[in-house]
Length: 212
Image (cartoon, rainbow, N blue to C red; front, side, top):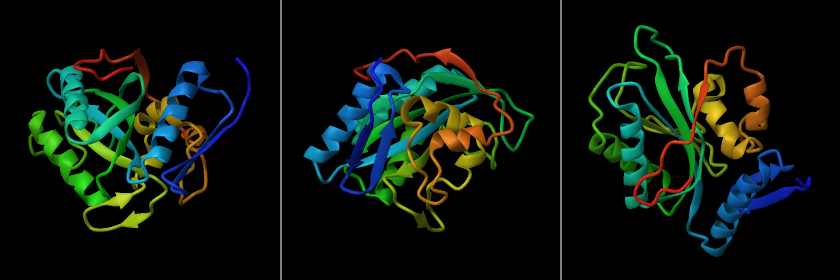
């Protein structure tokens, strides 16, 4: 593998990815593709999402979410491996399956949030308590380099820096993404974790046109 830098501006100055071939040739091509796509369409935003499930058929819930995202205007360009992880916040529940995706979308932040809630409902999510078990959960981690604090939506996600099940999958697809608040990369934030319960389960089998 040849060591080289990638430095692309996603959606103008919204996000920069800097990589020194850590991810291997295949993922570097995917990162390049994501960046080039945003340069050719100024209305698209580079967004990173975290997905999780610990109720019922966890793989099927995640596959359902991936299909629905594509159909609702969030084009998946980057996809992490699948991980199992221990529950966070409330321990008396089953282990989670987790993954992260990078998407391109023309939806603004609050419209995307509503779309994610629709996807969750369509894929079987039932009401639960904070940190409780759930069929499917989808969080916005980064929306370009947007910094937003609102009663409905906070970006970057307020708790992602302490969550192994978010940072470990993000390491697969964007370890050099810079958190606009701390100015640390995903790789640096992952290195600060004191616990990592994630176990790599390999690639989630794609369905209906969602590629690895």
